[in-house]
Image (cartoon, rainbow, N blue to C red; front, top):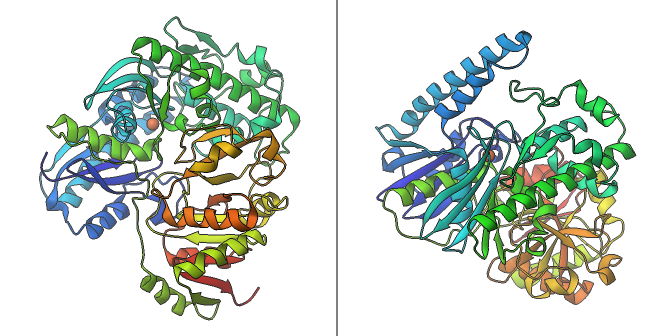
Length: 568
Ligand SMILES: [Fe+2]
């Protein structure tokens, strides 16, 4: 297929755009990185402008635009919901429908504004975009594909098979029966924000007893013979409401009221989080097994927002018949910008299956760019340029000595995780590091764990997992004998959400890990994303320096510059 394809995902959460040429993903960024609005849902105009500028093209070079879902089917679902629910909500729902209709009308105008010609506009089905993203970026020709999220148009879960660059649908579960929405409902019930707080619930689960609410929880769904489930809609309201997910009957069933954000987190909340995670895994693995039974292959590709559930993901190879699993770096709706575009490419005669595994697809800066910004901010920072052979041992020493180090390097990551280019690093062996990071750097809840980066060759020495985990999307056990030596990255249940790094994938991080193993014994570093609580990951050198000055981070590394604060 000739020309550039622009993939777009927007309108709900995690807006993004991606540029594809000859089957190669050239660049992709979430709009939130430019606007600073977490999970920004707006039309990704800033990302599109960056893509045009970066690849020296304009709207006339775009032959096709691929949108990540089908607005006509989505409106149909919203329209159907008008017929359900209490009459008091009717006018509210009418307004929602009107707003959505207007939004899609506006969207076609926005496409014209960015292309200035009658471009081919394709609407890919929501779950097809998810499935396409995981399959086409995977290293497999033949693969079973599972997509699990909140909801697309009607589908909430879909099972697929991919072979020779063709994807075919095997089975779906339809709205309102949704594993993603079930998880979000309990995220809301526990006082966290749906579509954002699910990580917190996952982090809370290991503190609880999964059996405490089990019998009550099992009244919330029934299993179906095809490996799926149906939710008991007596307790949930999302088949007719956009804002509420549960009714008062849920609290009565569980015997506890829903927690408000300002309330204390008590043991029953932890038990409920544990039960939710337990039941999520039970329903998820029935789907994984069903997929294997329908069309077996050695390879599983996983996508949809639920593919961020690292705890479940880390058990796939142990609990299922699949031999390999591929979870791309941005499996929720942002990645669907890439999925929709790659699907359009292959559906329209494209044949080149290119290597699209890299998560490093965003803006990047040179040492000269960095120096310019540093000179502007000279009154606040002290800085020095070091060559590579000086820099890496210096950083390793700072980490070993318990300093918290901001690390800014190369192209920005696509997806929710910092994978070593917009990261904050610390010593995994320091017993104080976790609470220090949580309290003064990330300013977030103390119960949330931090993740390690480890050299791939030495991963199985320290962790109960042999396969590569390049995108930090699987939680595995730390080996018993190392748990007490790695307190800052070992969660309360002895687990860690690892990222493996090879020399090929990230040369500089690999060198740092080698240097750390010389002075700190372990080729492991604590890694968290370069942002403060409720902020988006830093985009450019200026935002990195501002974040550095706004928290108690000790050292900042911007490419080859080492930076300290003038006023502490
Ligand atoms: Fe989705």
